[in-house]
Image 1 (cartoon, helix red, strand yellow):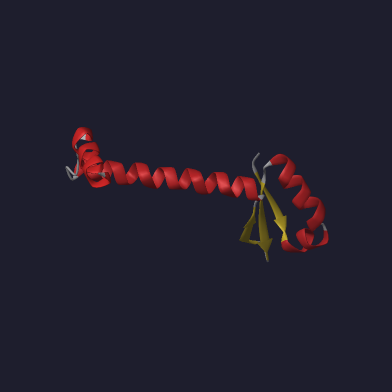
Image 2: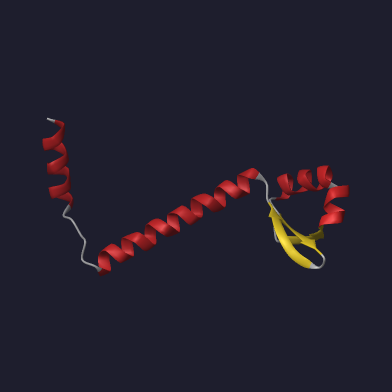
Length: 87
């Protein structure tokens, strides 16, 4: 499930087959133009998985920053405040 490097010209001539292949394999295509990487093509499910993983990493980083800055709240206090707002 590694990256496959493909020229843009080759991708254009075989796009349908290559898109099918990445949907099946979950691989990522790195498209090159004039020998330099210019774009990445992934199937939608792989893209969504990467986006969810990135979101989780951001949340973890935010939590760690809150801990370092002593922005902590007691769980009982939070739920008590929520219950008071609901009623």
